Length: 134
Length: 201
Ligand SMILES: Nc1nc2c(ncn2[C@@H]2O[C@H](COP(=O)(O)OP(=O)(O)OP(=O)(O)O)[C@@H](O)[C@H]2O)c(=O)[nH]1
Ligand SMILES: [Mg+2]
Image (cartoon, rainbow over all chains, first blue to last red):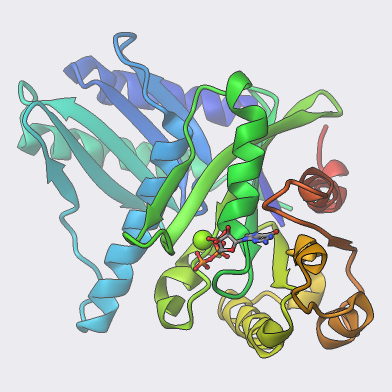
């Protein structure tokens, strides 16, 4: 089993993530699938994270948190956010199979970022729904 | 589930090392890492207990050539082999494209091998995957123990225990010494790519 995203979809995803999120001054945003594959990876040019390791850990972490939720009878925990001294990381699930990982400094307001994430997710859904599953 | 990126011309596949606890899954990845560390930027990621047992997974990105102009990026994972860690073991299998089953050749690990294979079959069912449909390679590990006079299972009986029905490719190996580790992973990647090849434009 595999799935393909074509040039147009990937361009659309990059554009949406750039205009809606990167312009807020966030450090990086990574769109991954729940298997840990990296779909889109954008950063502000100042940092270089080990994106593939991050993706593997993010997918695992998200899976672990979801599994904990189901053990205690919750469908899922809506807030997935880790706060650091200067950098923070936020996870947002998109449909069942994708995860948006946003890394940002304290100068960015979490509330506003969440709002923008909600907006961009709508665009991402439209783009991804045209995916060919093979 | 493999991801084909037509923009960066990249295929990402997920290969998971599965098998009984202490069978040598992590040692396989450590050996591969030692061979490629000079040419990759990332580190091997290990989530483990203080006693070096895998708690969640090990992770190592492994790039191996190209097919039809697409770079093949294989994400190598190990699962925890210990019976009690099934919850995390199951999570790592999400989206798996291919399996290396690392069996322990030590005589007293025979039952553990069989149980681990049954557990894998069960966990794959959870994701609606029939083990017979998934690219799979067996590795009969720790063959070096024979030279130290430690009794090991013969290959025929391991094949009979584990591979009689699946009839998957198999290798004898020593992850500790590095014998046949690279051929095992190369074979697993190549059979995993068989189904994906035709989808590349
Ligand atoms: N002699 C010998 N020892 C090995 C070999 N491969 C692994 N070992 C040893 O077996 C022990 C367990 O190896 P690991 O790689 O940690 O096993 P694992 O399958 O990752 O174990 P879990 O994480 O608990 O599932 C270690 O002490 C290794 O050095 C081998 O080929 N030969
Ligand atoms: Mg291990």
